[in-house]
Length: 382
Image 1 (spheres, rainbow, N blue to C red):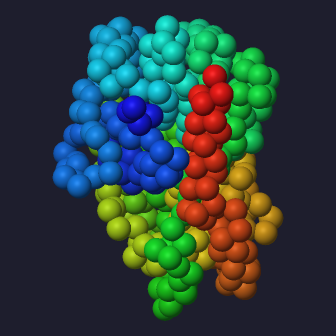
Image 2 (spheres, helix red, strand yellow):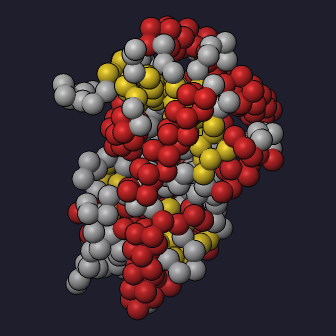
Image 3 (tube, one colour):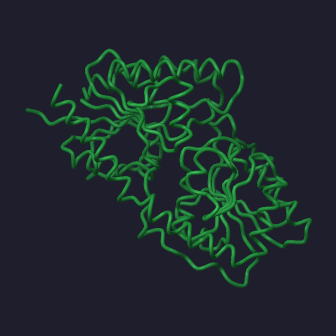
């Protein structure tokens, strides 16, 4: 008798490797043979990986319309992978694999999990076309719940409420698992840098929806007030995203006083060590920003916009929340942090404590293992 098979469907292997690889351990502990289907890109899959890898040629588009044009060819590729592997459980990660995986699975006898890490650009956009896409996504999730008893895993309470109240998914099909977990041994409490200007750090892709332009504007306001601070951006451009910032714009910002663009950073701990405060200036909802989790674990004071996801980590104990798309409010919070080292120290300690209490990798691993175990039991009883 063959072992149960679990297929993880995800767009990019590098993201699986950095954020979701622990899922394979949790699934194996529950008795599954694990398969991962993703775009390999330039990443190397280890020969001794505890899963079978399938290179799936996802295509990206800088617009919703372009994504629609490519939808059906990609749906056929996903169908071929699922037909070849014949999984007992399909675990889709992020919105695009969720929609395609749900549609293919609807005509098959398998259990389904959808992990939506953040509702993203399609729910941030407000065009008529975007609203139609949102309605379609809601219909697909409800279909998946009916046909495959799908469980939808969200990373924050706001997204869970949106999926329940706006998309009409029954609460019994919604799970809250807050992120991928942070390795508290790797991300240790770090002392503040000494004898340097106060440095603010933004970690993430260079996108308008991430509020990069707002952070640049806020820092310029800070400099005009006489605060000789620096702001560093650790992250690369993302040409396949509709919200990508043009290279010419980034080059112009890089000439402003105290503004540093570091590009993609593989080892983020030394960058956090050189910062006093970490910012998350997203203009719309996040899933659960890993940048804030890493910063909290390293003991950094936090400033974030008051949007879904950010609120899971940043509160009055761990940092300052500001309205989104408001450079003046962000500049005021940055100035308060720059001038009050005691405040930074208090917030930093509370942030580390919250990371230990609520977001450890061990805790999140156990929650995923319980999810897989519950599905294993339901399959056995079916």
